[in-house]
Image (tube, rainbow, N blue to C red; front, top):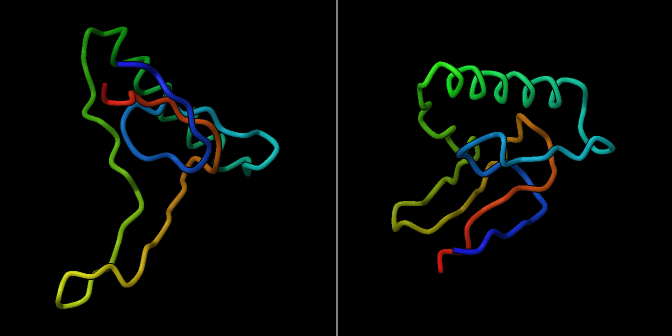
Length: 87
């Protein structure tokens, strides 16, 4: 698998693979990200693994399953994120 980078919101997983855009994020978003990364680093140091962070965004579907609304939540603001391309 090859590592890829994209720009946008945090999609869940390991917060340490997300790099906030310091010019576009609020202080609160940067602090949220730092806290999440600190928790993951502390767990790793203690020999523990945390479950992947959930994707905070959500979709609302109508009665036949069509997406009618997408709600984007961005507790870490916007920035670059790293992911595997699946190959």
